Image 1 (cartoon, rainbow, N blue to C red):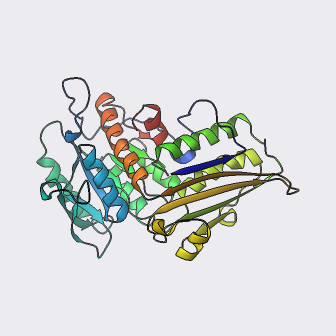
Image 2 (image 1 turned 45 degrees about the horizontal axis):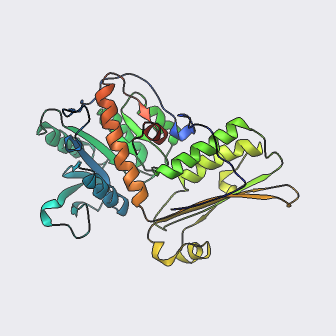
Length: 337
């Protein structure tokens, strides 16, 4: 991951409500389960079973591997898209022994597969030892994310949501009062950067009055929606320029290989990358500030997602009667990643 800051000095402390998409909620409902603690007061990752919805996608496989490396277990079932049913072997490392691999059955997710999906989940959780926990990770598709969250909320299933897109306001309302971590970005460094930019915007609103904001972002061509990170950071930068920012007009997306290469993405990262550059330009064109963060691959997001799962399991054990929606800033502040 590379980061270039031109013109910005990020100082101060992180705020838990740094972005609308990262805001914490604190409603009350019954928790799904509580996690058993080990003798020294910590939590044994082996008690955490992770259902990775979005397999056999590349992000789902990366998250599965990261969870296995951190000692968690992968549930043998996962939601997938129509036509992708079957099974897949997930593993912590590419060349690991067979006994470290887990076979996962792929079933159609909500809304089409809600009945069969709930039956499979109930069958699996019924066989879990006392104190063990199922937590869902969702890296599915923008068109499926609202139906998925509605399913998780209705059935009191704790979840970590990395899928972007969908109706985010409806999504947050649906998740209210449930155990969840929801964030447009799961990478520690970028989360801290986002919080710093928001702190700057809150401390010095209008400091760049008269400037124009524009954004360029490139992802692998399989990403269907505009970058959630670009939307979140531009929302903070909008406060600095003190001018309404049209995300449709102001954010340029690169998805094809040729366009991404021209943007500076290396050939080796065509299958998975996230390059962002934000421009603040003065009205007369004599001054320009740039904020840039570039990521090749998916590992940094997968590791952060796995840490978010562990964070959620710990909070469920400590605050058993206080389910809420957390952000990755909450995870970062607690030292969970």
